[in-house]
Length: 429
Image (cartoon, rainbow, N blue to C red; front, side, top):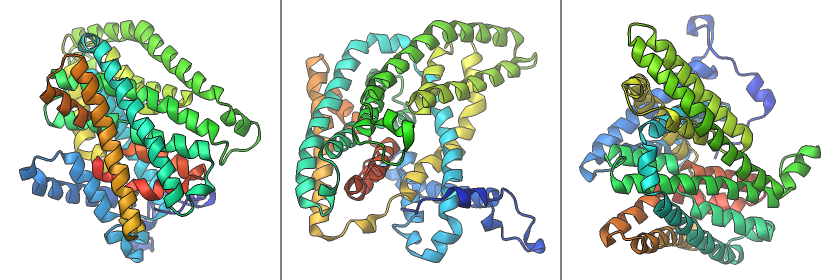
């Protein structure tokens, strides 16, 4: 993992160089280094996707593996290479650009998802989400007891924060990764895909509320002053939940009719009659929605997804927006996002038989809890055994949301979480 970057280091970073003929090294400037990083990630991830194609693996796996190979687990073991191509100060730049791609990808997922199909599976999806987060959360708490006694340094963390962070990390479904896999496998609009997306949406909201609770009970690891006192209050999780519900209600009641009006105007104008201005308005709405949920304390991707749901599916407007955004997001920006997960992973931090045994325990517990909980409720809701097991495997998708939880856990003095689980989440994505 790269070392934290100070504010002074970031303020010293310049955007563009004057070129080698004027004595500048482009690798010391943000924009040319970002171009080179993107080029390396795209070339390697596409090459790995070609190699994995016979195994029918989605491209997201190749992108995460590419990040692992480029990061400290493989090529990054050479300190000179890592310092030259992926210095710590470049990480916020790369992740910001990549996160913008994720924001618009979740907007496209919401744009494609028909709320009527979610309503058809809403009750079943809610039950599946409840089981899919409660059972692995309980299993995660159980594993935390084992890790606390077996892993050196685990007892340095507070008991309650350690248990909650472990439960949250093992119970989350990675909504963006799952949506990407469903889209690539052409399952997004199938009954299983619709149920999985609806359940994952419920799961995602619950996950951010649980994360807010975990942060609240762990105290203000880096905050100070009155702000720290605010973050220590458990009431913050209730505010996150209430504000998130208010956001969804406001967007469905106010923004959805407004977007229906925008779509009608855009369809009437057509491509050559100013319709592109309404596309620009829509893209601005994505950014505004993401900012709103980030202010609330829920990840910005949730706001983008909800905004996508407000765009009407009838007419040609949704198709025109998708055509303008999809290729740039899917082929350029998303690979950067998922590769950044691999870049954060260092396999070498897991040493010795006991550490690998603990890793196996975490993997088995997370998979068994999520799959078993989903399978049981899906069967109880009338799904066939084959569909129920497929849904359980899909809901077991892990990704960068879990890494966010683990990084926050490390900041809150729960370092063992990151050391034990980072490699697992990259593998299980």
